[in-house]
Image (cartoon, rainbow, N blue to C red; front, side, top):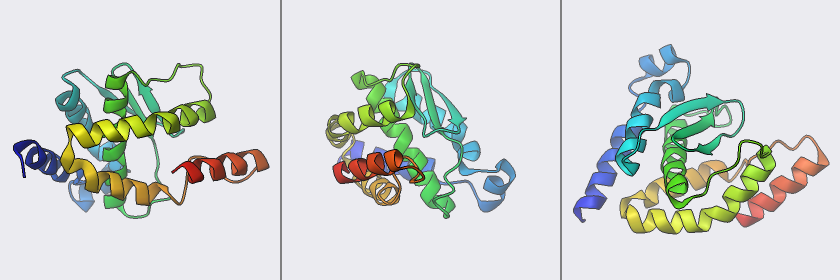
Length: 168
């Protein structure tokens, strides 16, 4: 294993840890417990300062700012939640580096569609830059495959979700 693979594996283990059950429970969510670590990771990966904030939506990327879902209640295990958040940070920083950033005025669906179109390039870049990231990609793919990215309450949302799942 090359030094960059070992470094990414170490970062993966270090940044994924929720920090003990007590800390996650005090914070209210794994995201709150991990925000500082994720901001540090964003800086390490890009060389730039990152702010990580929560949102009721699925989140997104803007210059220097990662917005992540406030709650991942569809993932019951805190370690799965932490892994998914870590995946989103790595993908978000890489997406920003490649120029894939949504405009503020875009709807959640337009953002999701743009990210789906960008994911093959982002995944290829991640594999090239961080060969040790494959387990993270697999774990996040398994976590998200059952739910993407909208609910199924309306016919329109259901059709969009089915299309997204077929792409994934």
